Amino acid sequence: QAVVTQEPSLTVSPGGTVTLTCGSTTGAVTSGHYPFWFQQKPGQAPRALIYDTSSKHSWTPARFSGSLLGGKAALTLSGAQPEDEAEYYCLLSYGGAFTVFGGGTQLTVL
Amino acid sequence: EVQMLESGGGSVQPGGSLRLSCAASGFTFSNYGMAWVRQAPGKGLEWVSAISGSGANTIYTDSVKGRFTVSRDNSANTLYLQMNSLRAEDTAVYYCAKDQWIRETTIITPDYWGQGTLVTVSS
Image (cartoon, rainbow over all chains, first blue to last red; front, side, top):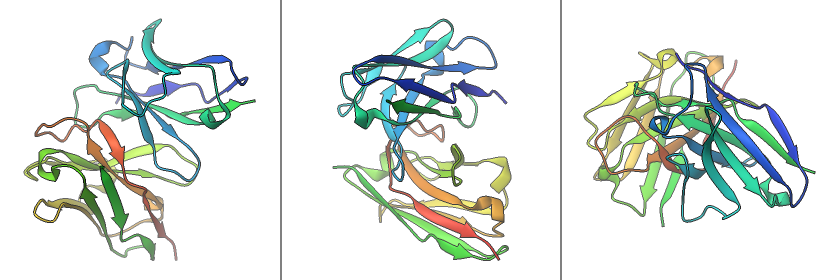
């Protein structure tokens, strides 16, 4: 089964920009994997941010954007806020029974 | 407003059983596939099971096959997870999640999640 890879941790300064990536052990991530991104804060349920690579939900802050970058899915946060400190998970579709979650990236705003 | 509220979690001994419920509102429940996703303490997200909108199709992750059963009552807008023969490694917060799209499928891409219910399996 494919493994979805994410950076274990990243740090960004308040107001700064950071890019989280989501890779696949099967090769390049494409739009056909329909990349999803979720945010999870401690003690809370995950919240969907991005679907189908770059589409935003109505509740997704404008400072978050999704793209494909260098064979991976990417989540870019521009103008980080303290409330953006959280765990971020990506999700990829492989056409199988289940989609596959990445292991998560702990983002620190410091 | 879409809302999903899980219940039924608790502490149980190994080999015991629990039935989780997820009461949904704010959308046409029967139109959407639903899933159970769990998160062990300090760990990442793991699919457990999914069910299509009609309830005709279900899938399970290998570690729970034969022990867990997912079902739904579309007249009551409720999703269930019957968990039998529980093991210590089933200890986790269990979330119900709604598929984003109106389609008859068990391949769930979630947009809304419940707040979760904690299942602890320990002697």
